[in-house]
Length: 629
Image (cartoon, rainbow, N blue to C red; front, top):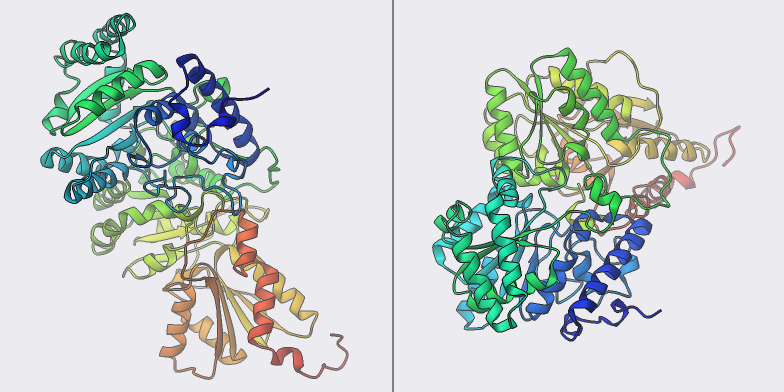
C-alpha cells in the first residue's frame, strides 16, 4: 500500500495535502521513526514529540529560503524525513550514513549544525542580523526545548534579541523534559502555565471560535483572543520584559491550530516573538509516552548486552559508596542524571546530589563554591559537554586550587552520535591547566580506585573513562589509594616501550603478546596519569628501550603523546625514537566505536601494524637461538 511519506521529496510537497492527509502523514512518520530507530538506535522520544510541529513549520515556512534552526537536534528526525532524506533514513547514525543531528554538510535545509543545547537562538539571531544587513527578506525560526532553555546561553541570546528588536521567531517546544525532567524555577513556571485552568479555558474557547471561521478571519481573531485572554495573565510578563512578544501556549499536536498560529506569527512578526507550544515527548508510541527518559536515546535491537558492566554503572556504584562513607561528598549533574549514572545516588541522597539543568558553566562554579566550604563535589559530565565550562575550570576551580573532582564519562571515541559528541579533546584541554590532575583507568576496577583517590586528593582532579562496557575484570572490595602521577609496568621488555593510557592499555597488552611471538619484546606501561607524568618510570623505559610508542584515545595535538615528547626533550634523550598514536587533526565522524578505532589504528591490529612500519629493523634482526619467528 502506497504511503504519503514515500511521495514527500521536499517540504514543498506538503503544501497540497489536506488536513486529514496531514494527520495520516503524522502517523506514518511516527511508524517510520519507531521502525528505523529500533534498528539503528537513536533519539526516539524527542522526535516523536515534534511530528505535528515539524509538519506545520514546513507548511507555513519555505525552507531552505526561510531558516528553521533546531536546538540540540535530538528532535530533527521528522525534519530529515520531510527534507529529501526519506530514502537514506535507514542509515541514520550508521557509518557514512545520515547524521543523528542537523548537519550543514548534509542538507541545505539544515541551516545550523547541532548536537549541544541552547545554541539555536544565538544562531538564529545571527542569521536574522545578516538578513537585515544584506537587505534580504526571509524568516528565521529557532525551535528550542524547555530543557535547552535552562541553558544560560539561550537567555543571553533572548536578551540581545529583545534589545535589538530584530525580527525573529522563537518556538518554545515545551514538553517538560530535557533528557531528564527539566530542572529549575523556569520549569516549574512553565508547568504552571501548561496547567493553569484560565489558560486551558482560553485555549479551548479560541479553538472553538477558530473552527467556525474562514482561515483569514480565524487567523486574526485567533491572535486577538489569545492577546486578550492570555496576555493579561502573568504568562507573558517575563518574556515581554525581555522585549519579546509572547503567544501561547498552543497544542503542539494539533496541526491546524499550529498552522494558524504560525501563520499569524509569520505575517505579523515585526520584532522578536516567542511562541509557546506544548508537546508530549514520545507522543504516539505508548512505551515512550510512559517512559520518555528511557526512550530518549534508544539502542539498536541488534546490540547484544555485554557481560561486563559499563563504566557508567561502575561510577554509579562507586558514588553510592562514596556518598555513604563520606558526608562531605556531594555530586552535580548538568541534566544528565541518567546518562552519567547518578540517578540511584539522587534517589538515595536527594539533598546531596544536584541536577542543575543544561548549565555546565554553572555546574562547575557551583562545585567551586561548595569546595570553598569544605565539601568535595564530584561533577559528573560527558567529555564533550565539559568543553562548555572551560573558563570555569580555569578561573573558578584551578586558579583557586579547589578540591573538585571531575568524573568525565564518554571520553574518547563515543561512536554513533558523531562529531559533536566525541570526547576526543579533554586530555588536551585539561592538561593545559595548571593544578589539574588528569587520570584515566585501564579498566573498571582501576576506575573505582581512581575515584576514591580523587576524593582524597585535596586538589582539582579529573578521571576520564570511555563509553561502553568495561573489561570484565573483578572488582576489589577494598579501595586502594593510588599515588598521583605514578604509572605501572604491566609487562617487561627491552625492544620497545608501549606506554598506553586508559582504555588503550588492553589493546597494547594484546599487541605485546602478538609481537612476543615474533621475537619482539615490548615493555607495556599503564601510564594511568596524563598529568602529572611519571617522569622516572617513563624516562627509564625510554632510555633502556630507545623506542617509545604512546597510545591514547584523544587528539594528538596537546595530548598524552605530546606530553611524553616534551618530557623526552627536557631530558635530552634525542636518541629515543618515538611513535605517537592517537587521533589526527580532524573531527571524528559517527560510526561504531570498534570501526572508528580500527580506522585510526587504535585497536590491537592497528597498533601492531604501525609499530612494524615505524620500527622495521625489529623484524629484520637475526632470530635468537631457540625462538621461532
